[in-house]
Length: 191
Image (tube, rainbow, N blue to C red; front, side):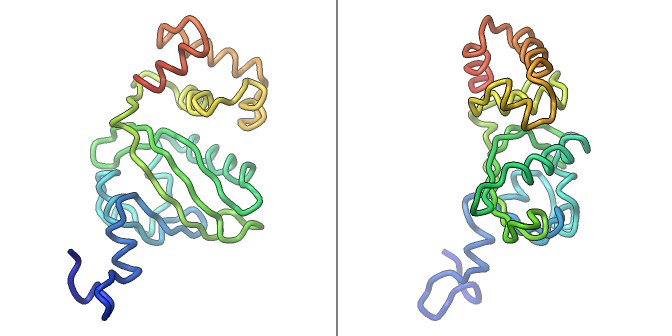
């Protein structure tokens, strides 16, 4: 149990304590910089506060290109309330290990999605492993296939042709030894 000064007079945790000790990773952001994060994020990304707070989210991504493309996808895909969510591949700072992560968030200013936001991170590595030989674009397409997106929708979201998506899907099928898209998705989810 959390003790003073992290409790209110009624014995309930303060909002700060609830943020810090939440069972899911939480990040407050401004202009794609980490303003604050909780203990779970530090554990998940094998990082210290100094390695994350005040830094760009780019330190959490496998590559600068994936960081940039994800930022563009967020802006293009916010719903009417400014919410966004997806599964993506992230990078642990301590080991460099890549892992699947479910990220959801809310832009506090729908007109400027990266101005300020609240983001949650859930480590999916216990349920889903990542093949080390995937390219950044293959990782993005794999994540969108898992969401059930078609080649046409993936192409729109990534700014490429549906045919290009099909080429990457073919590469993924070969790497995962899958004979069909449903089999590929099953293997991606259970790898």
